[in-house]
Length: 471
Image (cartoon, rainbow, N blue to C red; front, top):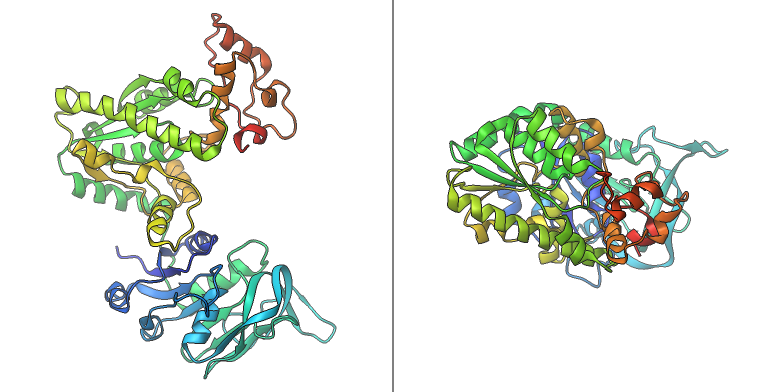
């Protein structure tokens, strides 16, 4: 089935992914692409008729200082368009309006008067003034502002500092908001985005994870055929859900390599084996690499450095094990595919780093060149999903909700354990858990037993305390 979709053109805002999440929460499929796509690309993208609307994201830049603008086709396809913050400003400028640097910059909470005549804001209000004007509680973040409306546009919202805080051309279904409807601080923001996507665009709300399973299974089977697949299982949510989904599709054709890096919760390595071998009856090879990971992480506290060490070492260990399997053919009969738990934020941020549009929040090891290094084709069944959609899909596949809602692993915070192992003592941040410590902090006694090498099977439990995890 072809899903209706919304296109989000990213001008570099740090919260562009939030726009996409709000659209997906309305059960409408959407994609994020850089703002500098060509008009020809956009016309081809819309050619199959499934594109129902376009959203222009915000940006930290000024429209009169950079060349970033929406492709002309955005305003020529006859589709509804919503410009947010910078997106509204470039819409105004490109369609004949005027944008200037504001004398008063607005960053934070604001109260906007909603001109309720538009389809987007009609009957939406958080409170009313004594004069009866509907007011919206919103989040502003802008220095520049639209000072003259483009031809055909009407005023839709205003504040004292920003007289044109919203504009619309109902005939062409073009709307602009100077504030951010995607953030939770804008109380009616979700309602605005749903009204645009479902009402104005008329998109079909058919993006549902439980229904997505069969669609994904059929796609995997068609892609893989009778060939075999290797997957690196870390015990985290993404790789676990990818493994469960692929196993649902092709069963014994999948072999998982579980790199037990020692950064999981207490006994969770055993739980991974029980889940995938004991309950799902999948083929899993467990590689105990805990000592190697903890040795490499000893004394490291900077989060990005931890990510790179963990990601690089995971790939290193996995490559060595996968090479054995491929060469021997004992378990895989010569695998042709490498499966990865790549999710949509990985794709957006890694792609955005190259185009310099999307903001890179952190590095991702799932988007490297591992398939080429191993000579395998790439299978990424979660590539179109956000994290909470992956969690929802995992529950629909039968994984325990507790598992699917767990903290991402191996997150930098888990590597606090390496500090304890290298120093042969309990980290200060974990010795006496406080209200700033997470519930994952173990009692001192279990740590002591693990360090002392007693008969207790407990392994040193990583801690997710802000004092060390994000130092």
